[in-house]
Image (cartoon, rainbow, N blue to C red; front, top):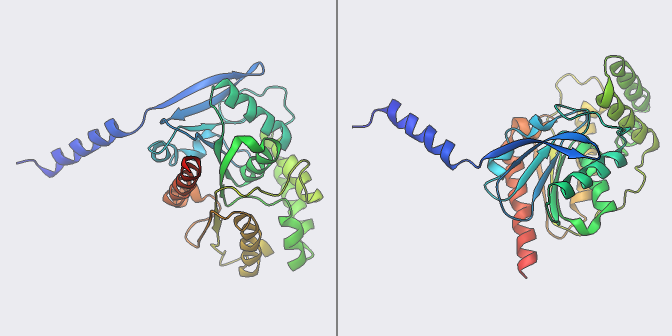
Length: 281
């Protein structure tokens, strides 16, 4: 008779064998190296783009499961995680051009499914604007909106000032790429726009929105009214597609990939299925 302990060991070993191998590597791009994790096989490739100042490990709970469906690539932008700084000023456009060069270096043929979390949502939307023929579908994980500060400001006129003050204080403790990306995010919100950003095309898209309100909100964006505005911003993207899915959760905070990774995995699977169906037809 197999004991429970022995059975648990067998299951653990089986899961290890069945899990797709992950290949961490340092990839040379434009004279510097980026930290990249690649797993799985198949098309279209799924590219995971992290949020403000985040490195490749923000997708640790997503890569193994998503790799069951297709090729998956996660990476750290220059100057973040183990990636070398490089010459980039870390503007949104710089980051998109860097990703484009990385995907070419990895010999990954488009089109791609791009997954962007938070500030990464701005980057994948800009990538779609600059390289529309290379993007087959999008997953936006509680993604930033370039007009979010202005729209929250309509609910509370003090908010834009509070936003700038918050990040000016935060910048005192930041350096390098993280500081550069933070300044770029503030610049985008001050302008309410991203240069080169166009309305989303009608491609398969999944939008995930956190509605987990703070019981003791400090700013208007943390109130129920603020979250209603946040949801409305995300609805605008979802409605651009005839093959869209809007997932709303009150159980996760801003990093849904940490709190409810299965929601992100289901969203990736949804977009992949629709992209493949369209390709087949």
